[in-house]
Amino acid sequence: MGHNAHMADAASPAPAPPPANGPAGEPPSKGRILVVDDDRLVLATVAHGLAQAGYEVIDADNGDDAILLAREHRPQLALLDIRMEGKSGFDVAATLRDAYRIPFMFLSAFSDEATVAEVKRLGALAYLVKPLDVGQIVPGVEAAFARIKAEPALAPAAPATGGVEDALADAVPLAVGILMHRHSLTRTQAFARLQRLAAELGIGAPAQAERLVAAVEELARSAGE
Figure (cartoon, rainbow, N blue to C red):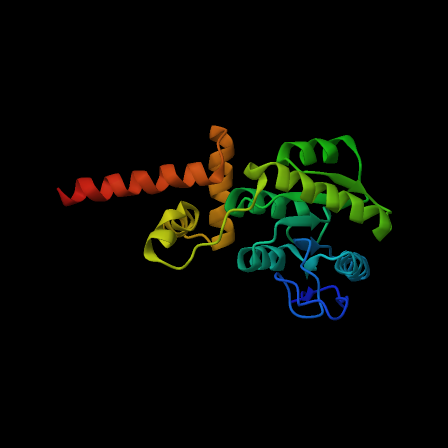
């Protein structure tokens, strides 16, 4: 998998004590960002530039890795390329939004009407059109982080702490499991079906997941009576 984490290196002035939010010799991170691009040169350039600007960067060169890393690390923001092999940036954005409530912005060479319309429909914080150098990308990322901090509703969902109640509180994986069993689907196919059902009803995937789990629970209760 093409991913790793970067941290900016900057020496803190002696003899000041180590910063409260970071190891000795490193300033606190400005925030954690997931960068996704299947062009590895672009990915390395952007990731390095954001790390140098003070961000903790997690990077992936494909959509599947991006979703796994997002679930594991819960970045505060994702910067996504749109046209990629396999899952597109739009596919990744929909999963980040519906499953993890992670805000995202796009970085793409395409600016046609259909692309822009989909960017708006998904609710991206920003849309940056290539070619751009890192010096132009960093201000856009800083503006996105400022908006996330100013609007608590945009903050990513907190990961579960591992307790039984936390595990059962997230209906999305439960609903995916139900659909996998009911229709003999893979996890990816089941989640796509959940998203499609939600879109048909004009609601989010988490809400549709709750409806599906509630319906199964009701059937189980009826069968037990």
